[in-house]
Image (cartoon, rainbow, N blue to C red):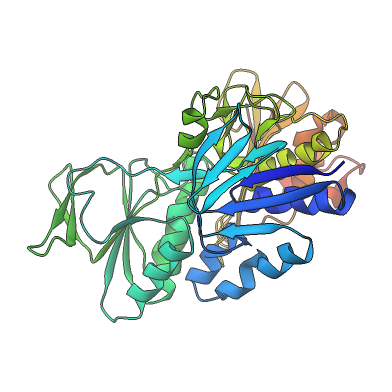
Length: 417
């Protein structure tokens, strides 16, 4: 019997879900797909190369209307869902209602807007979708324009680098002492800061935003910092995090904490209603990177086919999509008793590597400048492999795995506990 599957949201997790599901069971589901954006699925990770002029919007579209229609998916793009009735098993959109046997809520997330005075001024925006990216591209088309980015994390730096590539004078405001402080230690963050400044990006580190100032026409003109400084700008971009989009699920009576609460099979608190992607909360954890969202999609594709599968949380890795800034971090690299640090520095080349070992296992890695061994190290972290026998050669990569121990002090390498 064909089951009526309704999906709300056509993000990357949905694209992966339907790839798996329609390949394995093409005749099992009658799929209706709602998406508030007037388009299909695109690779949101590639918005930064689009902003930098390295790719076009068409290059990052992964599942357009033609892909969906070829697989029998009814697309209701550009249409918002207004309500979910879990008793009647009905999804209501702006242009009518659709019944479901299975419902997947994949509403994603919304950017967090810092509630500063002046946040409602024209020219204050987030960086999240195609329209946001186009606004920043348009700014770069006019000579002499200035932008301020609040947030020195991954997304903020990618926005800043992209606008700088287009000739915009960019200042990044970050409250920590180095950029990407959640993903990098101070030394790697310092190298990144130098690389960004070499691109013409101004960094204001350890700075707190106080108020967004506007002109007489209601357009942003400057950001005032807590120390009294004013940073002039024609555009202000907030890149300080995301919040799960849970309004629909909450209104439908589903269990919602910070996100839509799901179990390991991606089931919500209502029968035959599942949640997927950035809107979800699993075991108290929220998700903003693509790797766990793809894992969720793979699990849900199996569950919808009646197979056994379970989602689990794994260590995540971070890379920055800014050409020329090669960095990688994964696992736990905080200081702690019983932890040993193996550190490699090559100041002339701007290379830095730090591996954190605890109880005979590699638990964290930070790399800047040379990330060739990142995938290998990431696998070791994920597997929880015992590295005692290769501890002395771990820094030198997979080519030395199983080799005789080297003199770690023969190069610019230090071991600290």
